[in-house]
Length: 223
Image 1 (cartoon, rainbow, N blue to C red):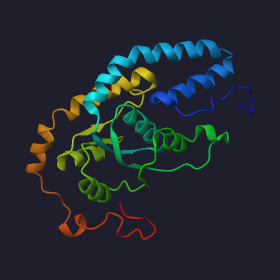
Image 2: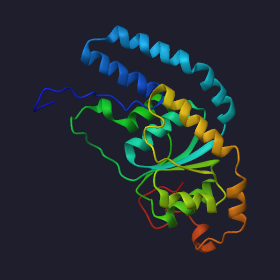
Image 3: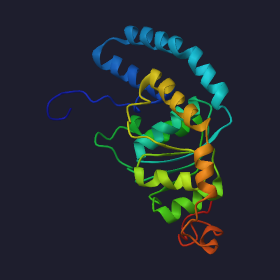
Image 4: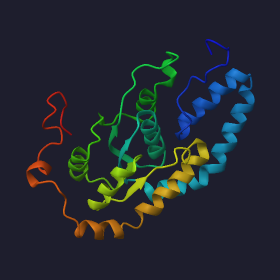
């Protein structure tokens, strides 16, 4: 934008209903098509209304723990909350306090807090010994991770774990439905992970698992 005059869409990423609303409207202002954008938003929301209501009935009251990169993790929380899933906590691998263009409209973490409420978050405690200690303490209904090396640990704890490899799966209004169906499918049949947990011995001692996962991080308030 600064060097070549190509506008940057300054908004949250188009994940979840309110994030997608904001993204389309920012784009509409850039190209001068605000009215067309509003018509498109209304049509897309109407198109997913029935499926979204059904998914909310199926997933409402379920709990989740999310471990992903910062902006994508924030975006997943918006989608989960639109589906009626309660976020137990989140772990993001980094936190970027500044943005290339300096516009707070792209503050994804602030967006999700402002639009759907606060939540517990930790930064960069992605080591397995930390994750296992934390997740076994929280016991969410599902674990959602972005990196494959973490997915196996949810299964060892008996928690249905979704490895999100395609970040475009939940993009936009219809992405909420795609994502919701994937979640509903793996949460509805936890038999495999429950069986694995019964026959798995974790490599961590009771001494470690029984104390706070933040025991050696004095500046962090324990969950």
